[in-house]
Image (tube, rainbow, N blue to C red; front, side, top):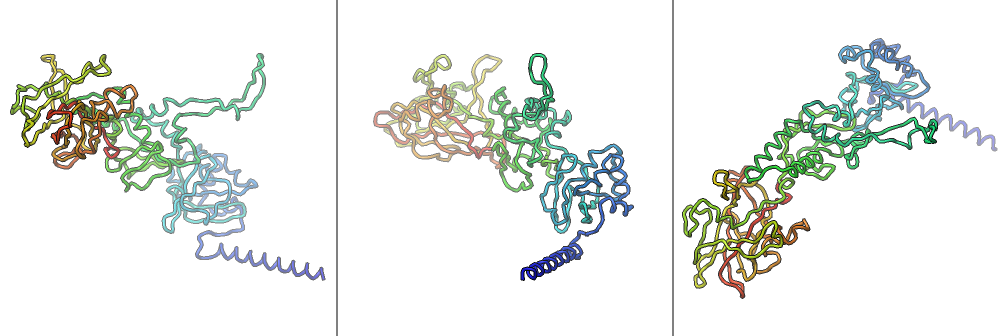
Length: 534
């Protein structure tokens, strides 16, 4: 009885194996599959096909032919004689030929879109599927043959070994020296004790190693762009692009009456470095903002890339930048001016004056500059100086003052202070203001004719007393801060384009504080770019 069970089991197993073999053979011979199955070794197949003789000859010249007959399963990516003639390969290019061999058999069905295969030269190449066509890098797979000891894929052209992003950036020429030197300035070689082999002991008893070293760069903490195990996207600026960027920055600062200081340059360089590294391969540029590995925003409507010519790397892709701009909210911490700069106009400041840059409405006495209080930082600024305007207590007419942003400067001809109307980059800002708050009336604030926020109770010392609050620097907590937040404003040009523009702020009396009079003492205004101000 037991013998019969064993007999039946053997028969069932043989039938099952026979059935599997038939299905396997049927799978590979199916007309719907582009992979052939042949009972030959890779060496036998190449020997039987003279159209690959030049590829085989190159394997011999580079000492790689012996890899084909080892006891292993491999995949060979073969180019025919015509493709070899067009490749321009030289007899000693072992590295490139190794790029066409890899361990393990990759069947045609294994070649999925995005698959990265490690070649014998230690560098990956990538599989891309487009419709019914399969590509190894940019070389199309023409046909595939499953053999006893591996797989052969015939490709349309001999591949070029792609460079690692780290090596590519390090080898950049003088046209890219600014970003190249900035990135690699902090690269250092470090001793890898864990992977170094002790070989002896010196006379002083110290261990002597067969030393292994590795390269460390602080950028690796966030983006290990020398790794072959991850994919990255790099936005690369040339020297010309960087110089144009800084010229635009200088022009912007000049319009605001400022110069680009060392701290500004450092801030700009930090942004450039942190905005050029991205995790993964980016191919969708229809979105407005792309976040870098450092969470910097790359705005596709402002910055410009050469999208038509991406540079494929072994661990990602590089796009050359054609236009670069440091975002306003990165480089501009704030723009600030004092309202008392009215006194430095090149006009007779007796009210009214048709030349006055300030417009006074409903005042009952000449506007004046008034020294209000001492500051907490007398060595830097002795006193708070305000613009004082007084209204008629018995009048219901509008009582207000409107003014443009003024920049104060020293005229080299007479050595005296003068003012000129300032322009600022267009975009969205938070508007802050400050007053001498004690007894100050309630006011409305208008920006370019539009009321901002609600009625302001400027008699509250927090946050309206001068500029003592709303600043992150602890040293400025009671001095030279932003002041009280009025609201969000937009600086625009008449034609709706971006660039530089000016504006006007109007402070309008609303009602008196119970302890005060109909008198406004206005100290300053500040603009701080919002996250939307790019």
